[in-house]
Image 1 (cartoon, rainbow, N blue to C red):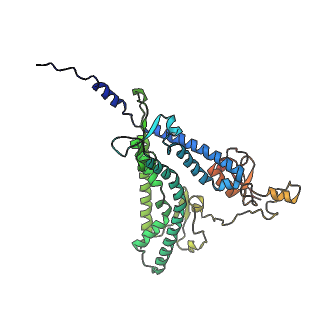
Image 2 (image 1 turned 180 degrees about the vertical axis):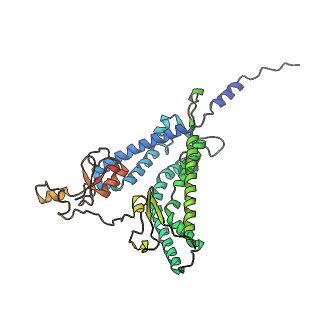
Image 3 (image 1 turned 135 degrees about the vertical axis):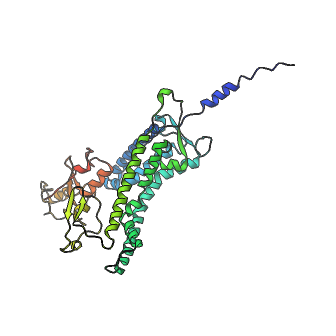
Length: 385
């Protein structure tokens, strides 16, 4: 009987080679670091593109198309990296690579996956930002017309139907119901607990990150499960408060409900409500009030600028040091819109702009349009005569 031959020696090295190819998935801290690095690079590209547009086409054009410039800069950055199959600077910085998890065996994403991800992360937010406001306006107009027609048909003592109450509820909370913030919050909660997908676009296209090196025991990362728990608690508290407010509002309009003697209109603000005096709704007020101070105090909202410097007698001290009428007229113009000042406002560095022009600017980029000094929106002061 022949003796068995020696076992092949290539089996153990082959198993070890296969095991060495099982790279671990990137954890939450590394994914966030990738996102922050890429966001920083995109912001730098957007800033440089805005500077070029400002030099070639003027500050007004650059300010008007700041959002489009940012989206196109991010699109260009991803096309030069992800679309071509290269790693982004954030991925190289964190030693991770993007793979497709659509199948059981991980592989590099194909061209269709990469293109779908780029379109969804750049063009979809831009399209939603332009279509959602128009959709809200149309829905609001239809709901206002429907509720006004049903209210006109009701008798003074007849209670409102459930359908009418539902329409009024949707009308009151239309901005919240048509907002994408809850979807982003749920996606962020899932990321904090699982550490898989930070972007919704990556979740839709099944793109994940893996490390390009094996981690030692001392290199293991901690997750962000605590942040997920805190975010869940925040959403639960907000939901409970909203349900409570809605129930109280429905009970207040039920037949036989007693009229309140006081109303809380804001934190620490309580106003008496007269049940025998004149109708409080007789006071004219704007139909639409933004949340905040104006809605709490019923401050009237001006539809036109308070001060418009087309008249030379309005805020005459602006441009008073000019030597000629043409120079004075030039000093009373905003450098952003190139028109006469409308509600002129001064920044902390001393430059003057229109209120809406400078506020729109600092929301996009918190710096002075002229000297680039850092500016906070709350530090901009409107001038008064």
